[in-house]
Structures are given as C-alpha cells and as structure tokens.
Length: 208
Image (tube, rainbow, N blue to C red; front, side):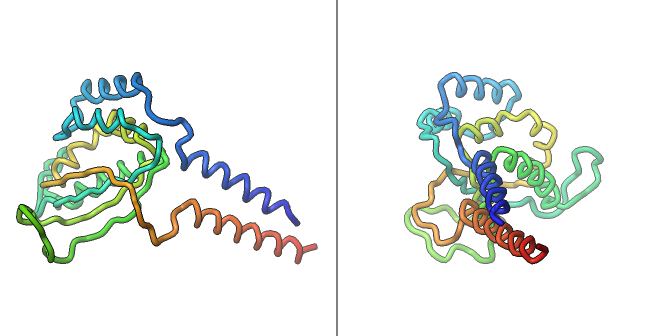
C-alpha cells in the first residue's frame, strides 16, 4: 500500500509550490509598477519611500520575517461606518483578519504574535521611554515581491480606516532569523502528511 505516500508527496510538492518563492528577486519594472500603484491609491502611510525602494531593489529572492510593534488605541473609538463607539482593539482585529487572509494567499503567515506583559527590563543608549506597546508580531513573508503586492493591494483601501482607528502607534522592520529552535511549516507539514499517509496505508491494509 504505497499509494498514500505518493499522494502525500504530491500534496507536499503543491505546498512547496505555494510556500516558496520560485520567481527569484524582484525586477526593476515590477518595483516601478508596484510603487506607482501604491502612490496612486495614496498608500504607504509613514513609510520612507526611498528606504522602501532600496529594500526592494536589494531583493535576494529569499523569505524574511517582519517585526511589528503595535500600541493599540485604548478605550473606545467611533466605528468608521456606523459611528458607534467600539473598542480600539476590535478595530485593529477587523483589519488584522483581512490582512492575514491576504498574507496567506501569498504564502505568508504569522510566525509569532505575543502580548506585552511588562515594561522594558533592559535598555541601552538613547532609548526613548516605552510608549506602552500592546502587541509584538512576527509575520513571515514569502518574498519581497509579496510585500510589495500586499502594499499595493487595492482591497486594503476598504479596511485602512480600521487600522488607523485601532492603532495609536506602530513601527515595523524586516528581519532574517539567524537562530531558530522551532520547526517551521516545511518540516511539520511534511511530518503531518507522512503520518496521514502511514495511517491511511495501515487502514487500507487492515480492510484488505
């Protein structure tokens, strides 16, 4: 009963086609088109456009992880559609649900999201006082091409107000892990598919 393992292998190959970047680094024409689309819809917020372009132009085609520090708007804010007072966190959650769906479609996903539970316990140099961060998030991006596509995605125009109302302060910057002590999806998806294939093979053998 080897057919379940063949199916599992095919499923894993499809997963890798979605999860990995097979198109290489960004091309200059893609960068120009993406940045033009962002400018046309009035996006990019407080992003330094020159630095953003430099990051895109230095694309190596590899995945990266975006660090996000967020201070959620405390208390109630007016809902952008109804005007009803709602918690700022609810507004941010509504934006986040849309963002995660679009990120998943492009092979990205949350790598870790954590809630702040205390003040700074160590700080060196000219560190500004903590503004009261609420959330720390690491978002895995398949490539810089996907980051650019998400930044230019017109569907975010409909939910940008939720982000603005739910976020009092934030900043983000891209990182690349140099030490990782947990299994990523490439490994645990392979193990899960292998387990399912083994169980299917055992069940088929028992029936015959």
